[in-house]
Amino acid sequence: MDHKLQVGDRPHVEMGSINGRSVEEFEEHGHENVSQKMSPFHPPERSRSFSESVSNSIRIVLLSNKLNWLMLFGPLTILVHTFSGHNGWVFFFSLLGITPLAERLGYATEQLAFYTGATVGGLLNATFGNATELIISIHALRSGMIRVVQQSLLGSILSNMLLVLGCAFFSGGLIYMKKEQVFNKGTAVVNSGLLLMAVMGLLFPAVLHYTHSEVQFGKSELALSRFSSCIMLVAYAAYLYYQLKTQNNQYVPLNEEGSPSGGNANDDDDEDAPEISKLESLIWLAVMTAWISYLSDYLVDAIQGASDAWKIPVSFISVILLPIVGNAAEHASAIMFAMKDKLDISLGVAIGSSTQIAMFGIPFCVVVGWIMGCPMDLNFQLFETAVLFITVLVVAFLLQEGTSNYFKGLMLMLCYVIVAASFFVHVDPVKDE
Image: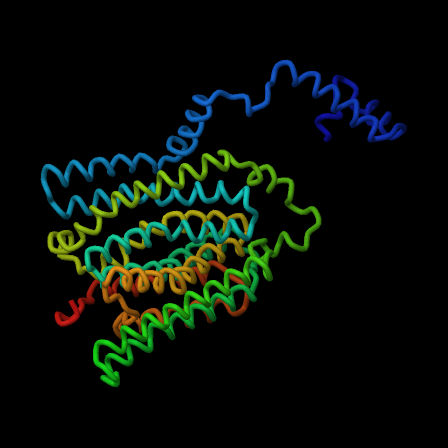
């Protein structure tokens, strides 16, 4: 308002006149003057032509991010597959081509979240942030690559909990080094409990298998997996209801909830202005999802060939490389919000995404495999299950205080390095192939 009041060369006189007159009267005249100046020369934005809207949307979504030049590797993947058939390069190029698509999928979801509210927006961010992993998993299920599905979903959980959350804590801690950032401890406890429930669902079939205590060997663990998956889906549905109906403010950062005015002006300028419309967001979501699905076919088919060509275990490709691409959107969002001291949103993106994969993604793939006649189960083998169990315990321990700093972030990132090194030397027994 100060800039609007200082008209011409008489800012002090005008300010004095305001004190003598009604402020509402002044604002009325001010708005009339502004409307008189704006109306003849500034038509409303909705009057733009269809071609202008399309070109503007393309410019914002495809040309505004420097990472988007990697999209060129998508068509290159098809050319290399058609003319050379070298699986190593096909896998590498498809991996690069999917990376910006996953990030743009997250961007379109964030734009859509402006029209849905904070809680639904957080759920949408987690859902479409995991769309890449689910698409790759369904393609792998169609090819009968059960271990790739299990390991890629496991890797997504590990990546979100250790790498994404660790980078968010670390970057936020460096920006706000003189204070400890805070987040909603109650939300973190609920998510940790759900992750421990998911570990329970994965642990029992594995222990049942390796202790040879099944009623029918090879069949009981599959039946238990399918039953447990249905229970986990019910629990996740109840969790969604809990989020949307009971705890509908959990994605509002703590440092904004209690302040009547602090920081809201900057937030309105920076974030309360969607760059594309709701319809455009939905269209871009459909386009990006379809293109990711198409490239995922090439990616999945080339995994084994890439492993042979590069002498890298399939487990390392599935657990480490694929989730890093799929989590590109979460990674960027979590770091960005942590650097703005909105750690609750970072936690909702990273831990919320892990919870969704554990309680929805994995059981969903078991049910889809059941429909396809593919024996996808929750027996992730002892090594993978132990890694997940230890990871959930470490993260739950670090979240219990409700505070974060750069050292906690560094610890999580170093834990992820240990996990990556472990899977680089891990190979499935031949009998489990």
